[in-house]
Amino acid sequence: MALVTGAAQGLGYAIAHEFADEGAMVALVDINAQALMHVEDRLKTSGYNVCTYALDITDYEKYAKAISNVVEQWGHLDILVNNAAIAIYGTIFDDTLPAWRQQIAVNLEAVYMGSKMAVPYMVAQKYRAHNQYNINPRLCFQWRLWSVQCCKRWHHRIHQITGGGTCSP
Image (cartoon, rainbow, N blue to C red; front, top):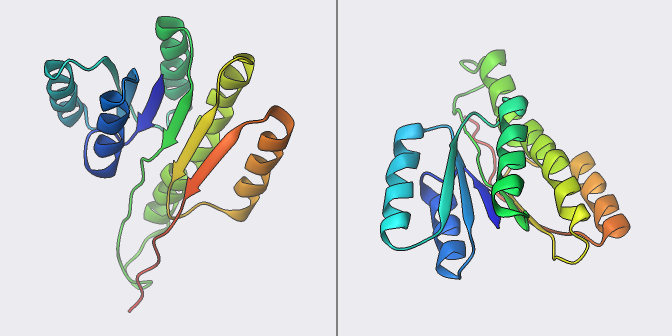
């Protein structure tokens, strides 16, 4: 079972589709409910085994419930793909602190919280592989240290695909 955030479009959709194509059950998570329903219909019509959760990943109570529901419904969670991200472009002159905080909440805090909520389920499955993919251009060094400690302690594999940059005038 793979859980993919930001699964209603772009890279998230491609990742979810690839996992499904390889035979995985996939939980699709996205804030855009309409786009998510369209993706769900398309994947189910193709015969793939998917479920959806339309939610804001910065609403940690709802996100935790979705992760819990996945484990209850499917019996396990093997892969977490932290793909959801936002970018609000602007210069330092027209950027705002609320916009900055929104990006930090989605691109950093939700990655940390999603991992913190999912990893205990993964670790409890001592017989299964654990994989976590963080596809986010704004991961911080401290989070990477925490991830490495989890890897060493619980033999958990974390794949970080980072990139991106900043726009400046």
